[in-house]
Length: 308
Image (cartoon, rainbow, N blue to C red; front, side, top):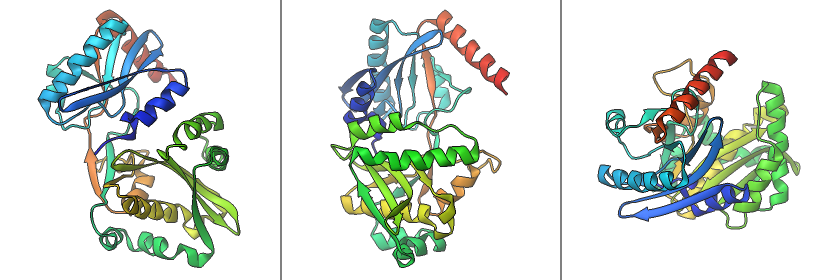
């Protein structure tokens, strides 16, 4: 299963933002790394990477990343392996866990799309299955778009959600940059739910060569009883199956042992579509400049404590 965050399409988007990227491939491993400048540091970051198949290929990828990082004079390397390497194995290699901020989700829900469509539907909750099959009976239509101009539909709905829930959302400029970079190759798709030709919900998905990832979504609160959020996800799943993709990543859930997690609410929603819970090792840093890394990490921990 490959991540869109390690794709050439995502690389093109990062470069459109003016960021420097690097790719390398070896026997059983590959990575896309982005050079990032932060407070008191520079780093190479490989979101959901490096991609590898075993411990030997992971070590080879880290050797390559370390050589690159020293050449670029960065403070540390940040990785998020999806290979099932253990915390002890990472610590033995000099890595330190990132505990003070949330990066890519370490827990997610994956649906196997190699099953027949009827089996995929059967594994949904009764409510999600019924909405997926019957949303059109309520006058709701769902269409897809690869027109960058229409990304404003999603950003406008997200702004409404952010206002209602007192949270911060990406602005339209960010989503427009994604649309300009990813829509022409259909690496990303905008889903729009409409009632009487008026958009009432929208969502953005990303496709790698084998996986569709559900990332951003928002709905008009006045039509919540129609279940359009559920209808959108159900349709995305079936469309991904029809496209020949093999996995659908619901992209981020609360850990099953933590019912009070901030994501517990939408985790119940995501799990209503079936699939299996997957846990990744999370984000880990490999310090290269130990004094610089200590200063950076101390600053991050103190900054977040003061903001509580």
